[in-house]
Image 1 (spheres, one colour):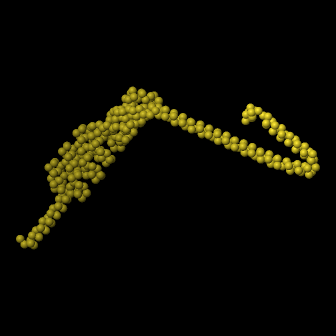
Image 2 (tube, one colour; image 1 turned 180 degrees about the horizontal axis):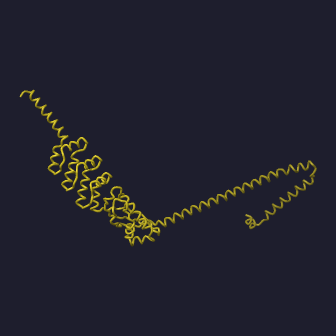
Image 3 (tube, one colour; image 1 turned 30 degrees about the horizontal axis):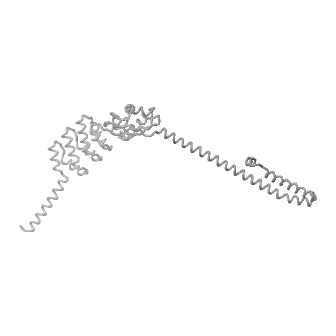
Length: 332
């Protein structure tokens, strides 16, 4: 065979393969044949249209085959619309099949809405059939006698399909159960009442209707564990006593500071008076000198006054010498 003929044959085969691959990419013949033999009536041009709408045909056809085999009435338009809205078509179909087997009334529109709301619709159906247990963390509450009680509860819930869209989740259930525990323990006169009757918590919590507005239905609340914590009442009294002590110390320190300030003020006043006395005494010689100059005081009068002052100083000295030790101690 000439080489030119061989090259032409290879090129022809390559072109045929390219055309065939392009054709099969737009015309999923294999998937169409599978759907036909599975009892799903879907046109080949419908699958081609999915290609142009950027929808993977297998994401629609495979769930449609699954739903048809399960006996569900489904069409490709609903599944394609849900896929284009960003939903999980395969999970919605699985949830519908599980709901049918469990005899739960769930239509496609509600299942699609639950899926688009961000909830796992298949898990919701499973929880509706097989209730789920939610375990709360240890919740601390204080009885009227001041003793802290720590309670852990297990809440058995069942998913409520009708309230899955817009209903609160597990966090709300845990928060409401914790609120009920705190209310029940706080209204008890003593922590012993809670220890003797732990079912009191369950009854009180269940009567509050904690599942209102949530995506679940509470079946039961079981107390898993109860522990005794701190004596909050005694601790509060101790803290109050310490606070009162610090207040009293602060007031005493304030009074002491005021007394010291008053003493300093009196000392300053005494020093001021002494300064005035010294100043006044300094004026006496001047006055005497002026009196001598003016003739109001004679020399003999001056000497007589000095003698009187000397006599007075001598008497004071003698009285201090003759003073007894007991009198001296008394004066001190």
